[in-house]
Amino acid sequence: MRGLINVGTHCAVNSVLQCLYVTDDFRITDSTVASELTSVLRDMDRNTRGMPPCDPHPLVDALIRYSEMTHEVQQDADTVFKCVLNALADDGDPRCKQASGLWTIRKQQSAKCSTCNAECVSHHAATNVIVYIGENKPNKLQDYVDDYSESFRVSDYHCGTCQEETELIVTTDITELPAVLCFTVARGQRCVQRGELMVNTSAIDAPQELDCSRMSVTSQPTKYELYGMITHTGPYEFGHYAAFVKNKSKWYFVDGDVVKHCPALPLSYYNVPAHLYMLMYRRLHNVNISWM
Ligand SMILES: [Zn+2]
Image (cartoon, rainbow, N blue to C red):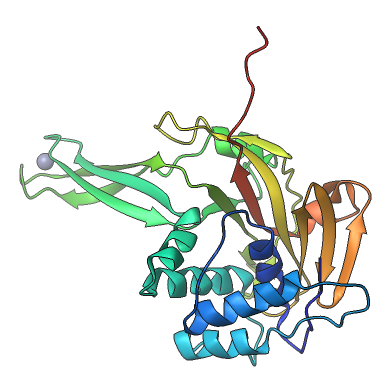
């Protein structure tokens, strides 16, 4: 595991990079964002004792050229992650699209009139699952996943089929779970008194192994293993990102050029569950569930 130079506000990029580095099957080829990503990931792989940390600058420049996002202010790690995946999906090389597709969650949405049952079905894709925390929400990720639903109702709906003023019932089913499932914890909370965005530091209990069978309508394998976590500390608009990543069954803490082996599970560390922002789970392929 090799560290990355942290100049000013590069910690969001650095944390995402460390997670990508330990993602199995994430292999890409050359061109702009993809080529800079390839080169920094290769550089991270060349790691002998005493080597200085890698420089993510060329990748940051490529991301700026691609998205026009500025890195003079702190970028959100989730935005950086999506920007990287979008750049790879837009790439002409099918292998880049494939790399980006590791995170693609496929969904089917049905919008149905509650009076005449006229239904409109559409298909969507997402790169992550948002985890809402706070009052009346479970703090265990497994409970959140078990109760996961994207269904809602729209009142004051005018139905073009039956011409009634009625209610629209919108249900969304996950039709395909990805090889890598990313969860992003919605920590931004509007402060009622001051009107500004505050960070909600409710702890979230993320298990090492997650069963997503109740999330999806498919019969794919649904057992996942935690291998990457990005933490956010400090104020909502800027603050600081660092990551915990699992490489060859060992956990590491990576913060800029600092790389430390974790002797214990990172989630047992003081305050880590209160600062978890992004969680990466990879699908377990060879789960032995038979005891016979
Ligand atoms: Zn209707």
